[in-house]
Length: 431
Ligand SMILES: *Cc1c(COP(=O)(O)O)cnc(C)c1O
Image 1 (cartoon, protein in one colour):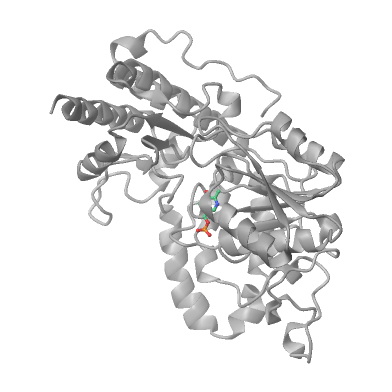
Image 2: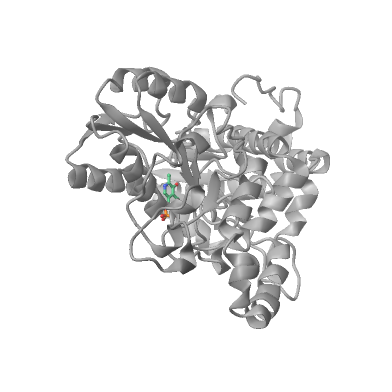
């Protein structure tokens, strides 16, 4: 996506200045993915589902459930768990982390089979893969990371550095943008073992140039681990093509796996037999039911598992992977760009005059699926919006985060939600 320029979808849109709600409806009418919205729970009034909120801007933190997941989960409890009982492990569940991983990998991550698995939480997978990476390069002593990465990433790496006597090399990231290839070039060297960065920054939405940065890291002889939490399912990722070593990502954000659904991990095939991860559990061994005297890691991807896979937690994400497979990740990205561009236009029209500043990249090629809008009153604005059933989230300092999950968000929802931001902020300013 970095090599194809994105056309301005609103270049000729006179209506935007006059009647944004009409413009939003016209965009919905022309949206090739519009029908996907109906495939999520809680978007249309119905007796069987909760009262729809006016606008949901947090699908990048906790995605909505797919309608298909209701049936999938119910069927699993009755037929799978209830009917197959312990036989389910042999028949399906032992392989499920890898089968879903392959599906996700080929649909949204550009990963060939046998390299993606569903595992523990993102935090735990980060620990396992980062520890395995630094242990594989014992003659190197530094981990490169950035000051604006998500807290868990920074904390986990700090813990690994202490545990292994390594040094952390910090890139000072611009909180309204993100880490550039030039900054990575300046930070890596012959002592670098591992570089850990987010593909899409959780605060600004900055989309890093993963291909260029991966090449820079490799030229320094180090390994790279990409955190894909805010890109998986909204931005096309080409892990094999970029020659990425390791990656992790959440499944409860754009992949709609549900609260606490387990993360995915990617280990490039060429590294699998070289890396040994630190949580040596019985599910990662060559012959699980041999119950042997010592830990013998499995040959392939299985060695990155530790304990019993969280099967119930990995069911729902399959429904979103199936939808993305159906429409194609590029179509998802195109809608995502159109949604954030539309939100940006509305913010400029309605919120800039109230003193709101954009804290995300203006260029859609350098932006993921969310926008951050800064104003000192945004913490209070967010609290009042939640009471009115308009749900963005808040990130310090003063950032209102507008996450626009492409399959489940309509342009009308964007217009209604941003009009509410304008009204609430206007009230607060005049109080
Ligand atoms: C959401 C997010 C996480 C969350 O990690 P958990 O272990 O699932 O709590 C980690 N890293 C990034 C960049 C995130 O956006």
